[in-house]
Length: 255
Image 1 (tube, one colour):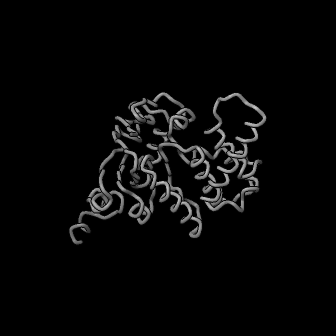
Image 2 (tube, helix red, strand yellow):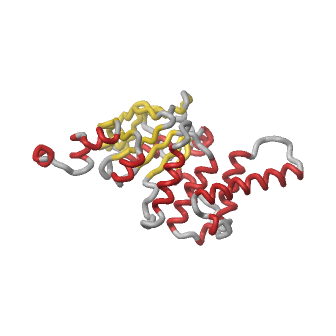
């Protein structure tokens, strides 16, 4: 279980996230929606450790992660795609993914020449399998610096998969991708949903994507949690119609 308790951050006199208490269970994809400036990405930043909370707690399986930096939270099981964009631009796509696999599976046993060779082969096979799942086999030998934006986003997901976190955090995963590229990422998220031990959080503006993928929706407005429930119920609620979809009370009454 991932939990936030009274999670709050203030920038001067502005409260960007205001005492958000929420729990996320394995086997559930939760979409986090709200109007621009609602605090969605800031909430993500607080969970992943990119921002330090003014007050409140972040817990994973009962462990308090609130004082940990992003790297330690990743090791604890929180995986966020944009955290992983600190790539090695002059290494190949395959080498980048293999390093992520190695970081997860390296272990601490005594090294021998046989083990070095054997592990390297295993890491390479695992990296190649992950690249196949994101349709990047053809780019595996390309330097990362030469990749177009869409392929960089796919590589972010590949690296996230290599780390095998308990919590997958996607902040607008298809942003900047072409119409042909976006389905690859969405299909990957669908596959990840099949693993009922994982928690998936998704910030997404495209309501058709939210309707299709989400098991649950929470809504942030002005940094506050204002709605939480099943997709059909939340999307139809007055607070979402007015605050997120821009429907006025008069329009709602007329409808």
